[in-house]
Length: 191
Length: 256
Image (tube, rainbow over all chains, first blue to last red; front, side, top):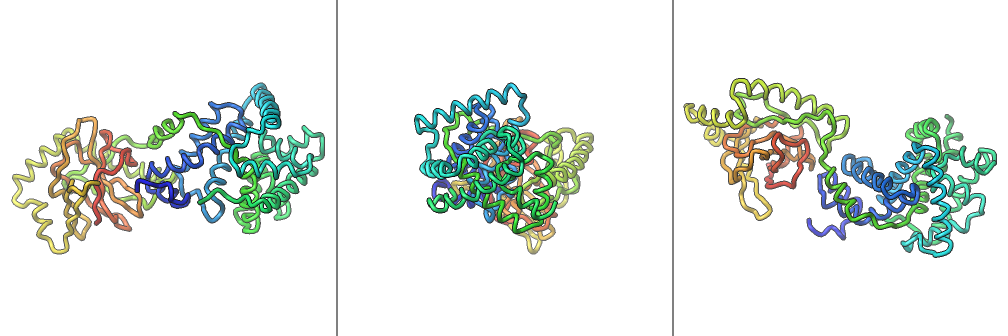
């Protein structure tokens, strides 16, 4: 099968399970940019983000059975893997490197607000709009946790709020995001 | 951890915002709780949507990934069974169904290690694989009964023809009901000594090594002892010593 452009993500994973490098390459073509984009955003370091991307795709190659299409689409699965590995990397870094990452995040956010160029995908633009509808305290808690790799306990310390409050803000913010994304018709990226 | 406690932490879990110990506790509960599984899956979809941003990866990144696809994990054996007439070697079964997981890889390694020991014993008496094949060819010529001819006249035998992408016949095997198989003839050109032909059984869609045939196969014998039986045989060209997974695309394949 030479032309895989019309094959579904789930079918591609089945082909990967049969050692099809071409299928893995097609998955990379479809989702490599998103996986790299998220890892880069969390880590603010191209080299470390590349390592994360390699890990994510090699893991899919070696253990394709870990992807369960009944529990979500492939894009979501790969981004979940990418994020978890990026966060692991952040948490293993020393304090100096973490400060550099946090500084870079501050610059990236400012750049986004001024230039409106951080989110390239149409869906991403919708998602960013949805995120912007959240109350500031909920959005800030989610951003610190998701994009900067802090635990919710650390977020509580950073914002000087009780842990239970932050836990509630994250929970409520995620639920609100779910509703907002549904309202905007943002669905999974699976084919 | 109670259900309510775990349920409250699902959103932080979906954001990877739990410490390692708490995460394990919650994940343990989620494994047994369908309601939490469903909620976590939904929250992870939301988190992934939030994380969807795009950045062109460096052009060389895919090449780095592709170059690591067949890295041999530490501890895996470097040699695989050499296929020779089966009165000289214990048959190597097809030891797994599906992909090699970390767990089954250990089993494969154990079986292959046993095979390696047998190969060492063969080496003592027969020399290298090249020498083995030459000696065996000579032995076969001297024998009163050619096992290949015998197989071809055994009731119930099956001819398996391996063809390449251009539908040219690359090799023909005869396989008996017992699982015993022999190379009947081939059109495989001789390889350099740093490469070898390797025979695979396709089990549940995945290739499982049967053994290496050397750079210039002549007399090849094997026994299929797996359950389920392979649906096809396939040949690849591999680095000398063989591979646990095909390092190159399949050269030829034929249904059993």
